[in-house]
Amino acid sequence: MKSIWITNYENNEIKVVNTWFNGEFLYVNDILQDKTFGAISTKLTGHLINQKNERENIKVNLGGFFKVNCQLFINDKKVEAKKVK
Image (cartoon, rainbow, N blue to C red; front, side, top):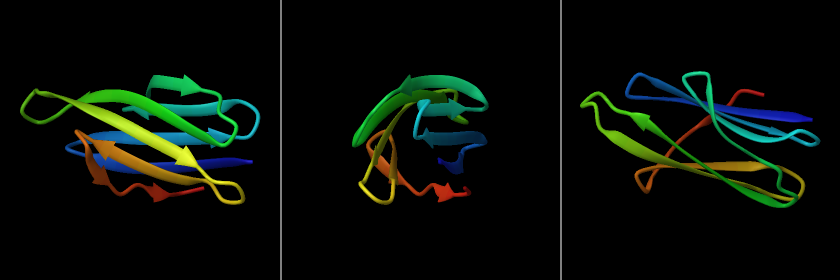
C-alpha cells in the first residue's frame, strides 16, 4: 500500500510518500531529500529555498497503526499537506 501527501509552499512542491515495503520518502521539487524505513513512526527532514532566497527547514512525522497520518512542519510551523493517494 502507498500513501502520498502533497503541498505547495512558496513555489516549492513538497511530496511525502509512505510505502509498506520500500520505506518513506521526502521530495522537494521532485528531488529526493530524505528516505527512511520505519515500522510504527518515521521522521523525515529536508529543506527548501523560499522566495527571499532563504533556507527553510522541513520536518515530517509519519505514524499510525491502522491509518498513516502525516504532519509537516516548515521552520517549526505546521503546514497542511493534502493526501492525494
